[in-house]
Amino acid sequence: MFTGQQSSVRFFRTGQRMSQRAGGFGRWLLVVPGLILILFGVAILLWPELLAYMVAGLFIAIGVSITGWGWRFSRRQRNTAARWETIDEY
Image (cartoon, rainbow, N blue to C red; front, side, top):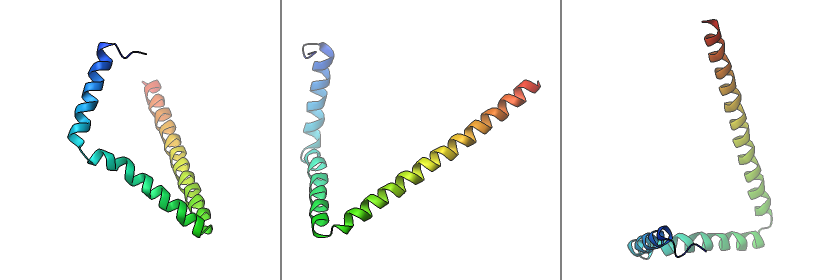
């Protein structure tokens, strides 16, 4: 679509230089996670209860994260309200 533009040519050349510098390391950034996912798939086929533990762990991690965000958000709201009260007093 925009391949004839000067900026797209510049980014394409930069991407080529980065991939040449990375050498074989850049390839492993895709191969290793793929192999890990394949191993997880095989492990789940062999031990189906492993999937339940993984999903439960994911739910716990997401729940802790959302709770932490909510707690931090409420603290920031209280701090902001307290600042506005001190500004209104002057």
